[in-house]
Length: 325
Ligand code: AKG
Image (tube, rainbow, N blue to C red):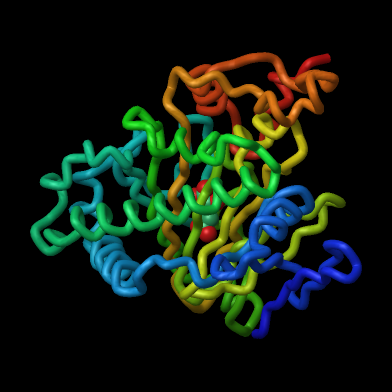
């Protein structure tokens, strides 16, 4: 499917979509404006010409598939995910479930891969290379965003991901095909069983990539769910709750979910770029309209937000608690 979104300079930043998903070409000089507009309208966009080597993507995807195809007894050796490690169906500690199994890892490489079975010995280096390349791209996007927002300090956002104490995490998801759906509908494709329930991501930015299987949907401002056509060579960017606060609500933390697919397995990889635990999550001063605009949120640290998020349900509007009344 051809996906296009272009900047029409004549009509001053009006744009068009074919699949409704904004498209950012990182090799184009106008990408910073498209990023800002996409973050305001959707909190979501697709990225091409991203510079992440395709070998590093396919290496990790093949390692992930080998891991997920192991017998459950082997995978469970790296579980339960509390929060890091292998998890199946249960998502988080508050009773959310989905048709998904996953590996949740810290990006500081503290995860003990030695617990993984021998067949996956290349796994640690594949994760390391991939996370390194994706973090670099995430930082480039955050710097373009800062430029587009006319923030003088270009690394005001990216420095939080580059910080040695950055609390970023990495998740590999596997959604097995849902055969019951196929039997019920008589054909393959997207079904209505929940793979991963609706939620927003708590961090600053998430970088998502999947194989060529559909399932991901995002919610638009009017609450309509739209399907994101899969594209295994591109990346998808989500604005997280923290970035919504740091832009004082100008950017929108996107609600998204995954529907199980009846005919094909879906494998996705998500880098969640977070700040250090002690970082205060407050609007960037230069975005508060020369001091005239008030913050919409109470002051909190990333640690406080994370603690509150972990004890909530997936679909809760977690920022509600932190809004100023
Ligand atoms: C998450 O892991 O937070 C997701 O939203 C999953 C998205 C996907 O698997 O495509």
